[in-house]
Image 1 (cartoon, each protein chain N blue to C red):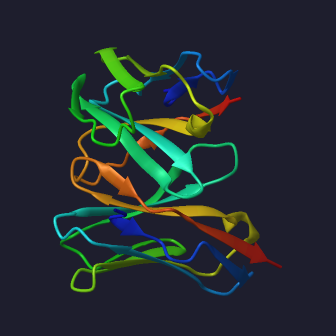
Image 2 (image 1 turned 90 degrees about the vertical axis):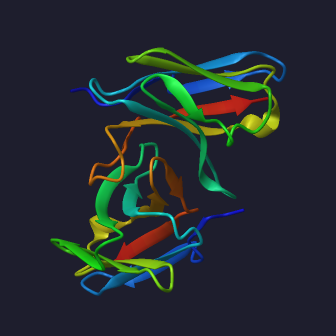
Length: 109
Length: 115
């Protein structure tokens, strides 16, 4: 039973354009949501988070949107850069984090 | 701080052998998590500890898996006996209290191959 779902296994975007990564969750008790970025042979690194009391959080080129009624989370990267190419995991939880299956983003020149 | 330290980075073992993965969390963190990464299930939570006490082990796949945290600076994940389907990357992560704007920090993982 996958409580956090990332339905797009991969995404390809041109440099300078917007990347939109999506995530859906099923547990309405989740109160904290995060995005992690993972390069090959490394552990996931924290990117940005949002609590359930907010609907948007922005950090530079990265913005996370939360739609609680739809149980949907998205990450916007604008403008996208080749160095953003990685696997992105969304995570949700309270005292523990449940992760999705990841979306591989490729940013091409 | 050196971050979360996992050892070994790579482990190749024969089916039926015992495997022990090790983790040193970030000093001062009071929560520790073990995850397994597979293509099908992504990052799967196996078990987590709070203040060295196991809180939720519902993700541990079978009795062959066990985890301990004897003190605040060390944890182990043991698989006995190991099977080829256990092959995956295992991550350890630590954090202060989640849900208060504080994220979990991950180690670099242990790539386990069971042949």
